[in-house]
Amino acid sequence: MAADETLVGSVCGTKETTACDLECRGVTKRFGSFVAVGDVSFTVPRGSFFSILGPSGCGKTTLLRMIAGFLQPDAGDILIKGRSVLDEPPNRRPVNMVFQHLALFPMMDVAGNIAYGLRRRGVPSAEIVRKVEDALERVGLPGYGAKRISQLSGGQKQRVAIARAMVLEPDVLLLDEPLGALDLKLREHMKVELKKLQNRFGTTFVYITHDQGEALVMSDQVAVMNRGRFEQVGPPPALYYRPQTPFVAGFVGDTNRWRGKVLTADATGVKVSTDSGLTLLAVSAAGMSPSAGDEVDVFVRPEAIALSRDEAGLGTLDNRMGGEVVSLLFNGANSRVLVREKNSGGEVDVTLPQAGEMHELKPGAHVHFGWRADQALCFPASGGDEA
Image (tube, rainbow, N blue to C red; front, side, top):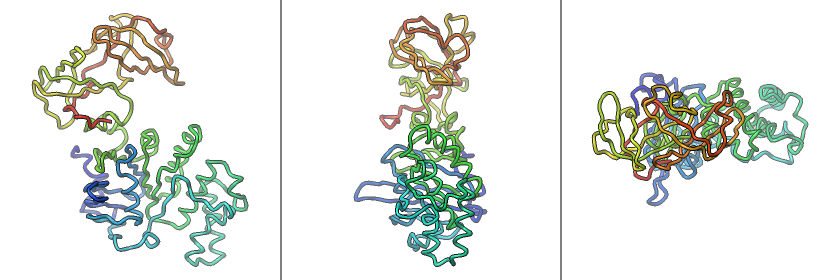
């Protein structure tokens, strides 16, 4: 991990732990011989939106359940605002949780759902009414208290679940893939709404998801998790443009990948002979120092590739080749073009904006394409651990 991304915000280091709402130190959880979470350490600055992104089975839900207190770690410590909560049961921890299926009570109206936790705490009735009305106002549902849960849309139910959790004023709100059950259009809308709600409440959100789009859009910081460990932690642009491991390069965003061997490597870049017979110019990923003969993977983003009807249109790009359009997929703001490289026969994924003549290409068209060396990242071959 790069020096500037080792901690999630330098204020969360040992010098000023009180600036953190959540800190995990070497947290480990095993189920028999299987290590579900292995020696994970991270810190979350106060009032931030922190996402844990990873594929199914990577350990992210197990980690969230340990923070909530539903599971006990086998090693390590969990601190909230600088205080260990390992000995506290879930109902006494200053956290609350929103689940994927929301777990709203259908027999209660909206106000009853939001008031449930307050009544359990013995809060006076007059104060409950005030807090419920305030929570509804803050989630954009004023006047909805008397409505039944069955009368609400999917997005409104999400807001009620948030209000029910936030009315208890937790230090940290844990969200376990809460958008997973929504249809695509509503999910896209709720990404923006969740970030707005987090800003409005000013509460620390810890959000887990397997959907990179959710993590990149909403988060201040993202931890990419794989096989029980964090691969990289940083702001979304750093993960996308400066991945530090082959897994992050392959999992965060779309990418083209070639495997090959290093021909030469120096301060100016790396020349790679790919298994498909291409010779590519690339740069080393941060912290990597490949040598001649090393097996490597080269990653190139589809949007980094320029496409032209003639080779002259590529200018002085370092990597240039010709090919034939296999297919085009219209995707609203852009088009996805699959091109078969003429010499190797390999297929390359290219993303083009709709503006300009190239989006009018047809399958079978002959084209030229290329990219700069600094848009191709070279990693040691991942040995099957790629996304």
